[in-house]
Length: 104
Image (cartoon, helix red, strand yellow):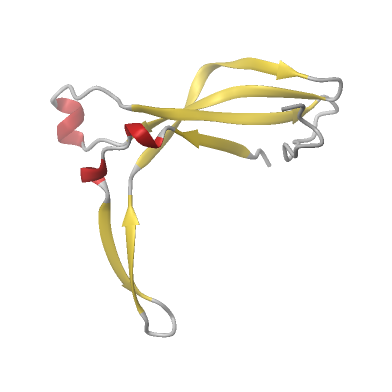
């Protein structure tokens, strides 16, 4: 299984697009969640960012604000919010990307 680390630039988030959603927990408690829809899109070609003796760090995804069908048809431009990074062990298994494995 591939672990994807996502980093977002919160300064680019359109606060007016944060939507409250109410629901009840199993215990019957009313909860209000604030949701913001994003899309994680795979790059056509992954980009190697860094590598060490036993690992590689790849940029494989980008993150954009999700748009409605009407917004897309109206030509609204994507708002780039961040990147999706994957750590790969040179031995082939996925790394968790702990501080001990990555020198930064």
